[in-house]
Length: 552
Image (cartoon, rainbow, N blue to C red; front, side, top):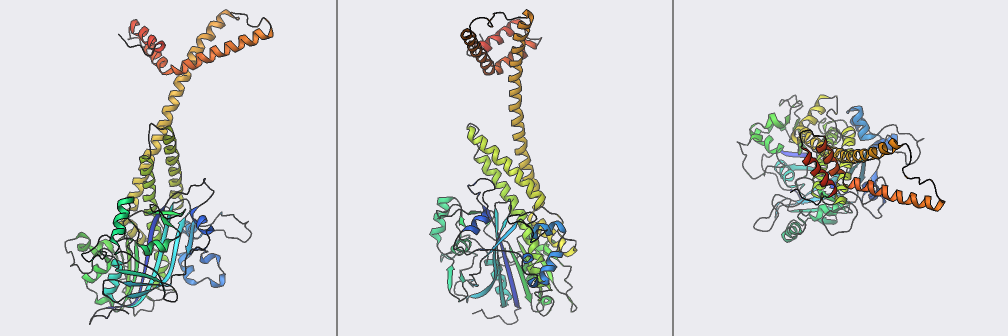
């Protein structure tokens, strides 16, 4: 049962909210190319997640106009990234050339979500439109997408949902033991309204013990259940596909609010709607906060906001982690799910938000891999050094593929869509984050190159010393023009013995020269320096022959 609306409070006849939760996946313990996360998930039995083909591989008779409008809204290279190309029934099985690098899984057993926002409040039930997992080729990353729909909500309740919904774990607890800022009780329901699982944010001891033991925040039970058979990386649960958090517990969110007569909304209402995910509904508006003082200039895209009877009275608000569309519920075009703004919100705007957060999450994963590689490095352990080099080179190669496959600055020729993408990307600081990660990887690559050059230089020094010693022997024997000792004469056994002895002697001399190559190199430099007196040159020679001898 929904809460009663106060007199004069605005209604939200239609409400949509989409969560995008990026998670880092731990690398699988398999050889490269032998298995990927989505292939492993697809191979599991009795799993709730089922792989789906996008609309472009289904029966053409089922292909909808909204899918076509989504496709043509983006530039060709973005189309190839999202949908692939060159699909043909003549292709051999297993041939993935031209396929999209995006792999989507969906579960259909969850029908609705019942939320009790505060202790003692009436629960509100939201319909689950779809529940997907997005995997990406070459990236140890998965994004959970949950879209819910509600009807006839008070505006204050819609704002409360945006603030409390989409938190992976409680940020703290109040005096009564209830989680702060999160939904008091979340319940996943099946198609018969039976409870599948529910949240456990009141279990304070559980979350405290988890952080104390694993140095990582625990995930609320209803979110952990939803992701199963994926399991948290630090938990003791069995599972090959393990994930860890990338950012703060607040999940990025999209919101669509069809409001009765949005022209009645005051500036404070707009600020509270646009910043609903981070601003507590019960707290007074912080007027001196920069995000509040310059709210419209920072976050609003008002191409379609006229604030007049003629309309279209649609405002787009993007703070980076939140994207909100507010419009007139009386407008047929705004509420049209096939051709109107609702269709754009669920398709074009969703793709924009997905790509922007894919960029940010991927860059954070790259940075995390670098930090983990450096922390694991022990320069006194050769195995650790070799493992460090392999990880850095693999990360560098993956970053190059990410740059050419996923990194875009221009998504669409349509000014409105491109402006929304730039607004979202700017608030997420994707460009500066990309520069930081690229510089970090470049520094690591330069370190590996300089280390390789140092090793090659040492090898060249050793070869040069050995060549000089060999030159002495060659010139000496060449001067005589003959063998000093006629080892070619004698019986076969004597010649074999002489050859073996000579081989042992020369191998020993070469190995001795290699072992003393550094000191021999120093001696040659000292010998070539005309400013060094003859006595010190003899001393340098002594250091080669007797390395343990100290200079008097």
